[in-house]
Image (cartoon, rainbow, N blue to C red):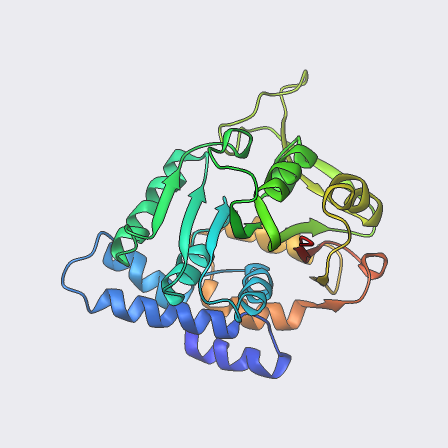
Length: 287
């Protein structure tokens, strides 16, 4: 069913379908290799449902932004592994550093790096961004996709990332957003990195509005040179979708691109959002 839902998504102009094609090409390459650190199931999943929900939008924004870059020194801060790995794989001049303090997730990333034979151009670091071992202004491109919202000291993380960008370089960020900002706390330590508050709850993420973006991000980077907003058409759609995925082990991930076309669209301003969305931003550091 996966190719059918892929085709059904095209009339909606769902972002990320071209990036999904890159995932399928990589999966076929791995499936036909005799030896691979990845299991057959992992390769099969990469072929039929490599990403879900707003990842289609986020990966498409970053992929399109960097399409004119061929050789650069690259830092990715804890993004979902598919984007930085496929970007590094497709652009032979890229030398990459991947940071991820979640060591279990980092091990999965390491397996994929080995499977696509990128060990000579890709270094992995199980560290928080605050202790990153890099010099100032040492990267042409820094990406962080759906990460900053999970960091309590988000402004400090942005300051560190921005400091790593060379003059003339780019920082690409995506974060969840809404017409009004909020913070979410949960009763489990999702990434094993944070302490609980006095009520036993753990910080999970922020949803940014225009004011919190200005205070927490733009105060460091300045205004983005380019941005895009993608959100649910009806409030609650994204949350219901996530809850179903957590509760249903047989959730039909193959229909995700079609679902995105039905339930999500682009918006011009955060104030227009009826519920939750994602904002993708490109920042260029002046020379």
